Length: 337
Image 1 (cartoon, one colour):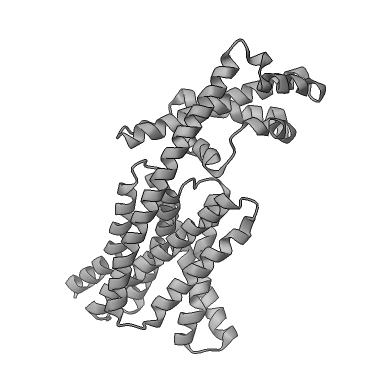
Image 2 (cartoon, helix red, strand yellow):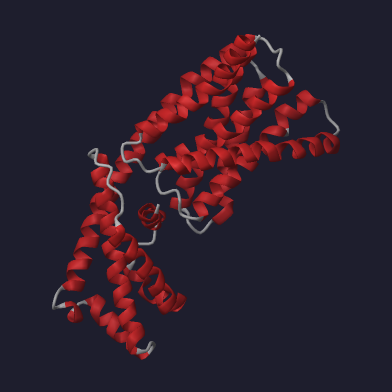
């Protein structure tokens, strides 16, 4: 009996954990810290816990058969709850590239599946071996894959349409819910559904990782050159006669002298840290897992102080010279992580 329980637990939990570990390992730039992966798994489990009250309310509200509910209502509720975690990470600039979107998305789904399978093991300990094979290799991987697909689609849309806000969530959420619903319909035998999930998702992740690596390489090359050029200009004796220097001089009419000096310091720090972040990523891609040192952390603290000093108006004034895309904002969180 104990041996059966252990086997069921391994089948229910190990596949999705191994799949997630493989994604983290294959990330050549190591964009996602392990502690964040664990934290997101926990948050995914929390969404599974939160889904049960919604399920109870939904069953009473819609007054429908449980099978119908699991096919049409539950997928939308569960995917929406998991999507909230991804949206929070994006809002806090924790996701910069498709790779970390895919990893974080799968981690949320893995957390959801881990709790759900543990719950079923507790209340239905006598389920047959085949059920746990399907739940471990099929349902659990599907949960991770659906949320990963949502994260990748939403990240792509936000890069293309950064002003759309929460509206950018809807296409990915719809597709994730459809994928979830189709799986729950079991149009094919459960074991065939499981085989399809295991066959399709790895190929999808290969495409995502390859595209993300190309994008990251291009961003590193172009961004590093632009940042280096700006820093050399700031540190040169001809800075005051450059367009950037002349622009900052013109701000003296709107800001006091000390504020203009802080604006220049902020611009220099922003550029230095941007170069430092790109350098770390290049080293990681070559296999060197260097971390930000005390000097870098001190500069981050100084930049935070200068942000308060120059205020929102000051940041808007120098925004034309700052690179402020999702990727550029993400790199500062990488340095502080």
